[in-house]
Amino acid sequence: MKLKQSVLLLAVLGLAVGAAYASDPKIEALARSCNSCHGLNGVSAGPSMPSIGGQSEAYLKNIMLQWKSGKRYSATMGRHFKGYSDEELAGLAAYFSQLPWTPVVQHADAKVLAHGKEATDRCETCHGATGGKPDDAETPRLNGQWAHYLALELEKYRNGEVAMTHKKMRKNAQKLEAADVPAVAHFYAAQPE
Amino acid sequence: MNSFNRRNFIKAAIAAAPASAFLTLPQTAHAGKKASVVVVGGGYGGATAAKYLKLMDPALDVTLVERNPIYTSCPLSNEVISGHGKIEDLQIGYDGLKKRGINVLFDDATGIDAAKKTVSLKGGKTLNYDALVVSPGVDFNYTAVEGYSEALANSSHPHAWKAGAQTLALKKKLEGMQDGQTFVLSVPKGPFRCPPGPYERASQVASYFKHHGMNKCKVIIADANDSFSKKGLFEQAWARQYPGMIEWVSGANGGQVVKFDAASNTASSDFNAYKGDVVNIIPPHHAGAIAKHAGLTNDKGWCPVDMLTMESTLHKDVYVVGDACVHGDLPVYAAPKSAHSAATQAKVAVGAIIAKLHGLPAPEPFFVNTCYSITAPGWGFSVVHVYRVKDGKLVYIKEAGGISPVKMASEEQLVLQRKLEAEYAIGWLKNIMADAFA
Ligand SMILES: Cc1cc2nc3c(=O)[nH]c(=O)nc-3n(C[C@H](O)[C@H](O)[C@H](O)COP(=O)(O)OP(=O)(O)OC[C@H]3O[C@@H](n4cnc5c(N)ncnc54)[C@H](O)[C@@H]3O)c2cc1C
Image (tube, rainbow over all chains, first blue to last red; front, side, top):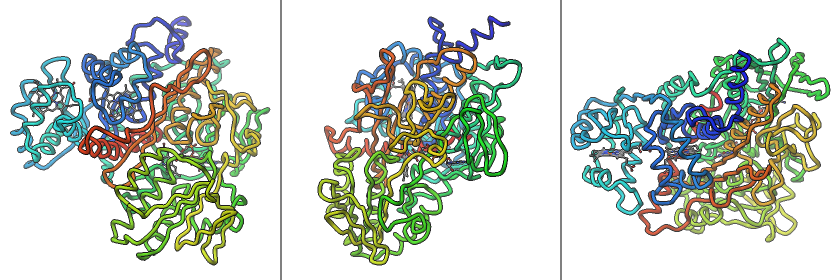
């Protein structure tokens, strides 16, 4: 008991070294700083900011490293990640991927939802019918993500000028009509799973 | 500004409640009795500290002393003055912290005895602590501007540098203005809370004028300083959105206001007189009064702390976070006085306190800050600071952080970038409020 307690303590305080990422306390200490923008446990309370807890490790790691290298466009995030080592970013990806994905289900008009459902036909192969069952680890969950964030993100993919690295996703986003964007965002945001 | 969706906000906050990310400590190794931590001041620094103390060590006895039952956020309060935001969206109580098992006392801390380790309250109580967090924000030095006073601030001439009643009073004064009139904003010598804040306020005032077709109005910024935060970004925004409307006078050009005459609404420096129809004087400030009273301040009125733990260098077991502290002697890159800095500092202090209570060395700290500013609806930008520990010292990481790009490859990119950051500013606020209070 005594031993277990002190191991726990070391872990909470970020003093243990060499632990696996999942419980690496140094990573937890870094992760606490993310809460200011992404919410406790990566569940965002702000509609323009994404929830990140429970996204897949591969997706998280990929985009964070792309931001650090400057390969991928971001408005704010990239400037942060230049201050982290690759190992820390990998650790953060592992850490947030192990938290539960917590959809914040947002209600919308039936008409908007119907429009959104139709417009997401072509998205289904990769994102699943509701955005909650991505077909591979590089694809993020969309169900219960904030609608406002999703719409802004789609704007990035649709804007031909900023560096969004995933060509197929970009093409798909560009095929949407402008009026589809909010409907699609509300559709995914309304899905519990 | 998007209106605050309270239902979703609460849902998200509740979803986050179990805090499964945190390992919990079975008990505090403190001679059988629970260790007590008292937090003075329930703003961004103090509320975050209280919450994370309890999250990271549920066995702790945590008491928060705050004089107001409702907190009003300064961030995004400039947008309330211009009418783009609502003050209700910036207000929050302490039920969230109470639900987490924190003992919240609405009282005024009137004395700290660092030798006896006690805090005395106006209401008569005396609290014992093993560790104390002090986050009282700022108080103002009214004597620095002759003729200005706390009484004027609370009646006809609000500074509105603490959000609340004065924010609404200044908004009302702005709404009483007519086309062709002048708004004078006086900025004190740094350090002051929110380095980009005054320039954001000037932008929001101009935004109000433009929105109401009052295109002959002027904003004069009489500044005691010779440069300012995100200057290139602000000047670009002003040239695009408010050409000719905002005039900035640097300290070197006589911008430092030392005198105010309320009868003629004139603020003067040693060289110039600025007559306005509305004059908004931001007085210089120092650490909240309790910090000075407790002997936690240096000769400049701020609280020196150990950069790695936030422990006061003047009193043991007292940790000062937020605006009240001077975070290190980094000449150019000292941590700015912002809500984001206060929250990160609070989390670092919490780690150090829990370690110390358990007889362990302090964990390696990590500091990050982001300040967003909005100059007009859909036009926002930011500055990011990242600090890391290298060779036992806190250093600013030059490769990271910095300001949003001033120039981009195309107009389309620039417009997208500014739009995104205007939206993220609002999302940031909701999260940082929830992270402190929910
Ligand atoms: C116009 C404006 C815009 C701003 N915009 C931003 C922004 O966009 N982003 C950003 O990061 N920051 C911004 N800031 C700065 C931010 O508001 C402060 O940095 C932040 O509030 C600091 O937190 P704090 O805990 O140190 O102090 P505060 O938030 O001021 O909290 C101090 C608390 O302590 C209480 N208190 C004080 N003394 C006692 C006592 N003796 N007993 C009991 N209670 C006491 C007070 O009532 C208060 O609630 C802005 C500030 C202003 C003025």
